[in-house]
Image 1: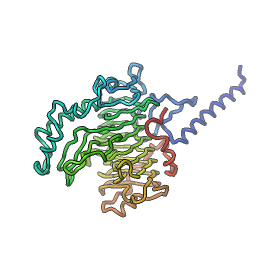
Image 2: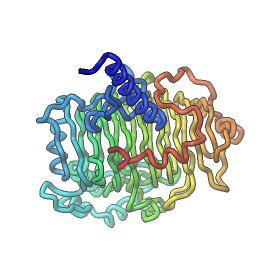
Image 3: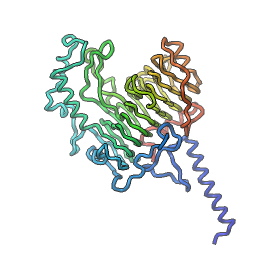
Image 4: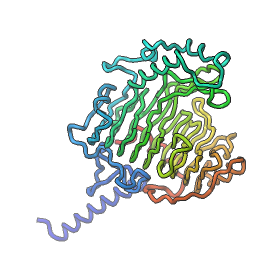
Length: 448
């Protein structure tokens, strides 16, 4: 039988082990690791968002499908299996969906590959006919396309959407199985009007619209607009997107042709947060090789009181714009790494845009900026948005980015905001080490 002194010694050793584990986690700045009393990590599929880890931890917090029973725990490797596991978007039963390997959204229920031609079949749509019908030299530039070929284009796009849009119900955890290159190619996760969703450890690639719409009224010269984001939040609440990778690969925008003098854009957003979505944490993701990356707020007229988003410890590399573009809400952007070196033909226009009275706090972020890119280009705004910036660094030198932008712009960013972030677990007080630490702790495939 153990003596009282022996029992005390065992308790001390257990306490020391737990303390060491907790220190290790803190050293990583990693609130995503939840430690139990015996210093063992909670299994990946049942992990929940830690307390005070950004806006998604507010109120009831974000637990996803942690309470799922065995009947609602799925492992999926095909599009058909994913659709079945998601079930009805109105079913709030907690569920865990483990994605094993890469799921190609452009396949039928039997796994056969589908192409744009398959979606267009039977609709009467052809790009050649569409271009002929709406050539600005003939159709003009004063109104959106209408009539036969536009109706056919919309029908073909609807067929594609039915195949590649995956509607995620409330109380769901979607997580990639470690070591399997887990992800979804060519698809869109739609998190719409639901609460409590976790998306982790997945690579989202090649989300492409086969049937972009021509809008001659978009800007001075018109634009081709596509429909699908890799992940889209519309009226969603309590969403945690963590350790994912977003990329246009293998088709980059440089491969897009031009029609009517404008790029035929097949990509939309990477992760868009719109339609009064609220209480969202975006952490430790990699966003790479993309143009319009993250939109927060779909219009300048969205109502106030929502669109509260925390964005931390992400890597943005080869991003043209919207990293993010924020409207209306209270947005905290901290400990991110922005590498604005041109990549795969993508060159920066700006990183952060605050407009429509958005209240952005940007602190302790790090920008890697090559020669020739002006610091004043890193921010943007419409004259009504605010960015309170502190501790942000450019090439390891703390720099007042807002002052640099305002000195070069006729539409100044406001420098004060109406709120103070308090949900800041894991926030690092300096941007100095981010280029090193985030390289190995972000994106899909890191978690185990």
